[in-house]
Length: 324
Image (cartoon, rainbow, N blue to C red):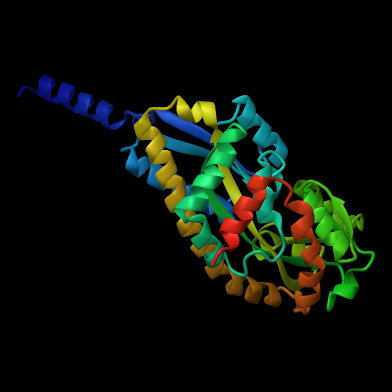
């Protein structure tokens, strides 16, 4: 090879090495309101890894955390309009759009994340949930965990009586609102993005939430008391517009569903494993952790089961979830 030919060959080789990796044929934009690297976000990161592996890089997801593209209601509506590919939302917000999902907002329905996960993975229940989503114009991709919900307050809560008259931030969800009325509190619905400032200024006296977001959003700085009530086993649901999903090639549909389901199984286990380390870390930050007797909370919740289960499909889903 002549010197000139060698130089040309080397130049061509360098050019090839500098070429960017081929872009995925399908890039799905997914948004949520939790902090980056919080447990919900980690689930989506896992989903991205699985999706890229299952499609040999032909499909991926681009994640927008921390409410970059709007609050939960805006994200859900963006999916409905087709301006956002995928949204992850708390079940408590999504159930305003898929009413059958209000069943999962009922207090004390499942004592652990693993027990809830086992039910979610039952084919009968998975089919019922997909049918409910489809009827509302959504494709259900996966169900992640947002942890077991407790109480964060500006002063210790030792018993249910300590909630009397306290302004407690809840989600904009009828079951949550009625539950905290039943517990003697003054429920105050507001967007999660407003919570830190509301706690700091005294607009609210406390809020319900899991140890994950209590830690991730540094809410312990303005609500240094954490009462382990375990009133709700919260899910984070990943949905897509059904018509957009139906328009995809079957291979991509399958990869999306499998990746979401497998990542949800991984994520739920991860969240359950994080509970004790998170509480230990909070204690080291000076958080006072109390353990009120949950029995009065459960008793106050009983009327909600009859009041909130209105449709036949809601009752059927509830019966399937609570069947032995």
